[in-house]
Length: 186
Image (cartoon, rainbow, N blue to C red; front, side):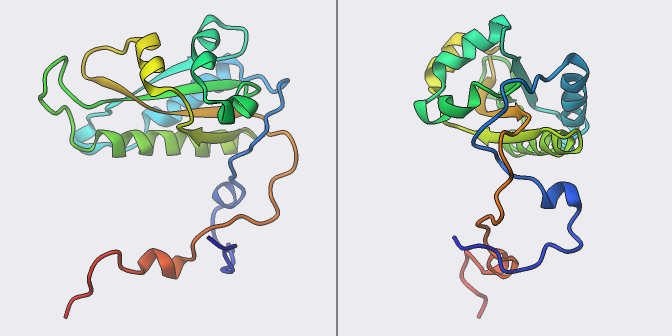
């Protein structure tokens, strides 16, 4: 990827300023009110048929949940994620109870919407968010033992970023988003 040469003028400032920090300030706590607002933002995300197939396991430093999650982080994520004020394990409901009946064929997409809402809310609150999948999926799933039909998908580290945001960010250009990953019509 290359730095996006296209101006971000007109893009909402919350979106234009968003970045995924590689370092968090360990003093940047996420209090109960902030946690509630982050979850409230996720709650209001759209979903197919209003199925809301998402759930979250939250873990703040010093809380028992944090000690359950941290050992499952990959070394690449553990270097920075442990200092975040909040780790959120994102789960989706793919099946009805323990069956193979699909709860929502859009469950993963809808979970992504909920996490996106959470990250924009975090930005509005002066917090940064870094979504990641650098963890032992099997180990974390075994540790948390989600209810039947539920699956761990990803994690989000939230808190106060340490250091300045990057001056430039590598993003594909808008024209590339429209470049067909499919065969053009003849």
